[in-house]
Image: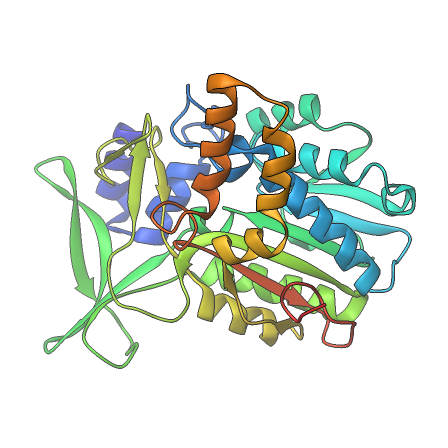
Length: 346
């Protein structure tokens, strides 16, 4: 990938950050997600479903309650965006399997572009599954969707505003090595000075989903790390083998992500017609969904180190110093519906 990027920049010129991210993550030959399983101990990072089964079980409970709140449509699409190895969806289906009406009505759809991860999902998820390259091809039926650590991996643009003007950050060549450079931007952005990040592709996907929810019925959860309102600062980061590295250091073999702007995302869902409910922290959401009660029940069946590790994993999800505060949960739904717990009370 490094040589490919050098040659591309030499021919086409500097790459804006979103173009750089798109190539590093999704290039059909060299892209990070196209030819590897990045998850778990042997990979580069671990997500909440891999930390504790309780996460997926509580999401499953939320899906059942929400299905009833939106009128128990049958059939309906149970959708996951960026489902990784399929662990979360498998846990959701296991947790919901005892509610026959829900299980019989659900049609599982996964939005996934990675051939490697599709194979992992096929092995993990029971029953009939339909895969999609994008949200546009999802069937025209009511939908409940889950997007856990999906939007943070979508490309961003970075703009730098100073007293000298507005600039957009690019990847350039210096002495045949990749480097970052701020080049003049052709338009004005934002109010104050600083570095600001935007993700046009994230907003486009959210608007499309918002339009589907409003037209067809349904609701969805976005769970990711990020900030609740527009803030300045560089959040683009790279991870390799569970350790931070430079964003230009290992293109194509390190994970690239950025914090999600939940304010912008909520506005995009609403631009599509859906309603975005006030978000919660992951700690709040999982606590209100009954994490402690479930943890007490399951851990009582374990002994010794297995029990300690199980409890530590669940607490990692909600601890303020770990994932509890950094991760946010946004619920979006068709505007005419019953209240959706825990975002609008019982």
